[in-house]
Image 1 (cartoon, rainbow, N blue to C red):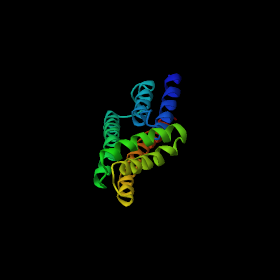
Image 2 (image 1 turned 90 degrees about the vertical axis):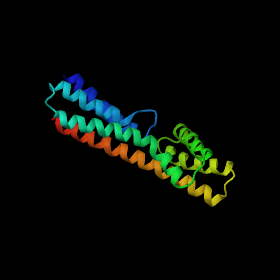
Image 3 (image 1 turned 60 degrees about the horizontal axis):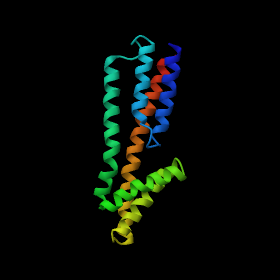
Image 4 (image 1 turned 120 degrees about the horizontal axis):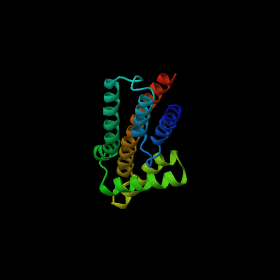
Amino acid sequence: MIVLIILGLLLSIVGLAGCLLPVIPGPPLSFLALILLSIAKDWTAFSPTFLIIMGAITVFVSIFDNIAPIAGAKKYGASKWGFWMSVVGMLVGLIFFPPWGIILGTFVGAFVGELISGKEGSHALRAGWGVFVGTFVGIGLKVAASGVMLFFYIKEMF
């Protein structure tokens, strides 16, 4: 029981960190932590309704996180070059300047991609901004969801 509670707490903390690191699925790990605490406490820690709602939020946020940068790119007129270079920029930012390099790399990558596709500077900045906003909104929703799950985990742990 204690092992499951400690493992769940670690998963919840890693899940929160995973919201900023694209290689770690943050909200699913946070949700798994809630499940582990429920198992450790013989399914009395959380109601089935609560777990279903948190599961639905996890699925929604995970899907939205993948759609938000694309929606931001389209809203601000980014090309395929801008979008894909934003992904490259995010990965380069993650490797060289974690975790903040992810955000900056996404913007710079989209901007460079738009310049490569032949767009002028102001249009490239606008498209880069769109990808940046979409990425930031997705990250923000993941952090909010994982933060709420960590809050409830700690609340029910004691």
